[in-house]
Amino acid sequence: WMLGRASEGLGQFDRATQYYTDAHFVPKPHSEARAGLERVYQTQHGSLKRFEVFLKEAESEYRKREAADLEAIRQNLITEKRNQEAKDLTLETLEGKTFTLSAMWGKVVLLDVWASWCGPCIRAISEVAKVYEHFSTVEDVVIWGVNSGEHPEKVRAFLAEHQLPWLILLDPNREVSSAYNIESIPSFILIDKNGCWYKLTGYHQWLGQE
Picture 1 (cartoon, rainbow, N blue to C red):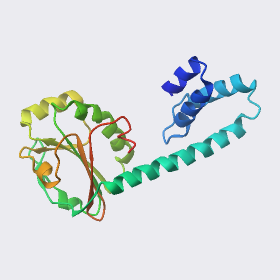
Picture 2 (picture 1 turned 135 degrees about the vertical axis):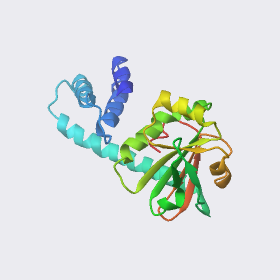
Picture 3 (picture 1 turned 90 degrees about the vertical axis):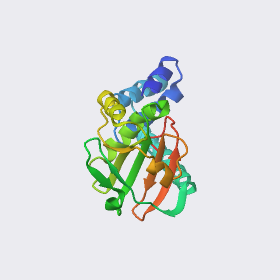
Picture 4 (picture 1 turned 60 degrees about the vertical axis):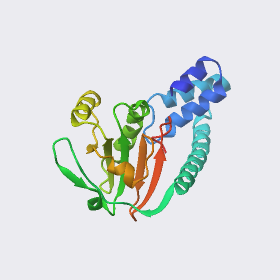
C-alpha cells in the first residue's frame, strides 16, 4: 500500500494500480487499498462506471501472479529438500521445561535458529512473526525459535526486549546446527508431516511469504 501511495503521488498510475491491487487481494487486505484503486481508476478513466468490472479483472490477474509465486516457492523448497529423516533432539526453555522434537512428528515443524548478536536474525523477527500469526491457531503447525549457543541470561535479556510470542528453546551446545548442517544463521529448518526436512538460510524481505 505504501508503494502504491508513493507511485500515485508520482503520477505512476499503472504501477500504483498493481501495488494497490496486491494490497487489496492479500489474505489480510490493507483497509485503504480499495480507496487507492478507486482514486487511480477515476483519475485514469474519468469515472467509476466500470470499476467493479475492472476490480474482477484485477483480481483474476492477481490470482495468476499469486499462483506463479506459490509454484516458485514450492520449486525452491524442493531444491532445498534433504533426503534424510529429521533428527530427534531435546531442548529446554529458559524455565527448564524440556521439549522433544520427536513428540511433534506428524506435524509441520519450523525451527528458527538464531542468536542475539546476529543482525539478520533480528531483521527476520518480523517475517517469522507473519508466519506465526498466520499459523498460530493451526494445531498441526509448530514454530520453535532455537537460540544457538548463547548464555541463558543473554537470551533472557534479548527476549525481554523483543517479546517473541513463539516458543524459544536453548541450544547451548549447538546440537541443532550439528544435526541439520547449519553453517550460518538465521537458518530455518522446515520438517514436513512425513519427517522430510528442508533448509532455508539467511534473511530477505519476502522471507515470511516464502
